[in-house]
Image (cartoon, rainbow, N blue to C red; front, top):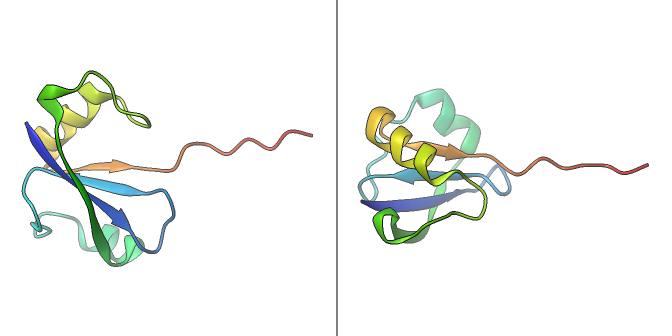
Length: 81
């Protein structure tokens, strides 16, 4: 399963995974407004890998198939006091 990954310009460390390159039509308008311009980051074959660095691989596959995209938010930031 090929996936096309885009970086959000308004939200650091936020990415959108899509099943087709440059196909943003099915993304909610309010989500696009929050993320700003989307910059192509990479193409990835999800069938040829075992893990992703900051997302659950099976969750990504399921959401891309069912919803048409996967939104990867930044990892939680912990402040140690």
